Image 1 (cartoon, helix red, strand yellow):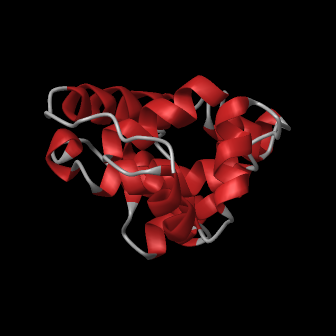
Image 2 (tube, one colour):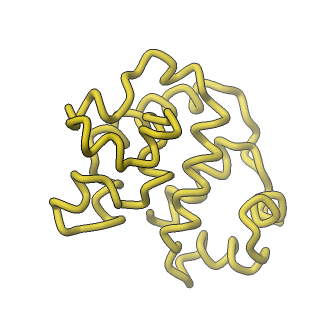
Length: 141
């Protein structure tokens, strides 16, 4: 995730830097640093901010099939997958953090999720829905 995308998602959420820092459990300085590009955005923070965005726009992906159907995972793989066991197929990228069979096969781990077809489709739907909402871009701090 790049600094521009981080800031855009914060705006879509309608949160100030201070409010977002509280939700993410990081300091205000960390959020400022992510947005300025002074610090890399950790994968855990990236997943959490996407989780907030997705949970704020559930209607955008209500009709989407779960990841295990999209990827045609066999029963053995499904039974070893936390998103299948928890029945959270739209949040495979959040729960597994790159532990799904596709990510393991790619050898990319967490980095795979940001390029996964399931995540990219969901992200596109959610961002489109969020961008149609009228939200005032929050002021810094």
